[in-house]
Length: 276
Image (tube, rainbow, N blue to C red; front, side, top):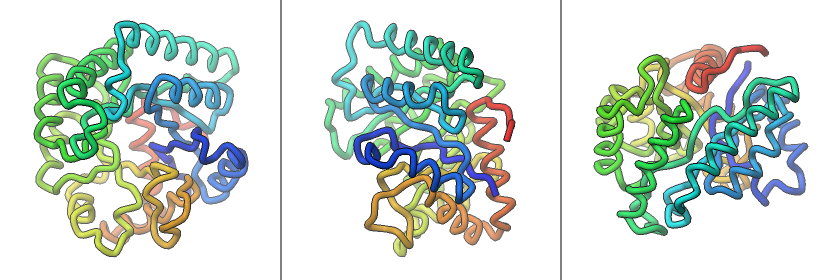
């Protein structure tokens, strides 16, 4: 089985002592591709440096809603340059482009680490930048479903999303089953993580069951949201199959089939060729 971890933060300090070992363990469990999700400008640059010559790694860049207050008048130009420079370097290194998405971006009204009006302004600016760069978006949506849907609908109506490819993915989906359909209509896939394996997972499992199999991807969000049976430990990509196995149980599918389908979905989401 081959898996694609579509959202991880293993380029952070939590993995500085054993990064290579983490990648080795991932490969031994069939996780052959990992997307490193940037949360701010320095973090995105670190992810790009690690991925540029490693065909196992891909990157998304952007500013998380927690850090929306750090956006300035030069941020868009710097991110655009980072994307183009990194992908040029990857091609020169003999691999495919490695910056394949923009995010994680969105709204977080749970923590409110950045003012809500600033989050909304920066969210829109980054949706526009992703359109300019022709990249799908990775959406963070926490306790902000109504506001996020409103902004995504406006972006859709303004032509900011591709009509030929998925618009992006709602990362670590924690919304209701009822919100799945509106997101699908806007062209989004949905990402599911460790919480579907938890004992109290009624809401995420109901949402998972409402997602068509061709719109589903899996992610660890490592080092966070560690799945059962490793809950309480640092999460890492090698644990992704536990999420897949639980999803296969919920959806009454063979694990091999769900691994193949979600990997194909991720390749389509990030506009990649299956060369493995």
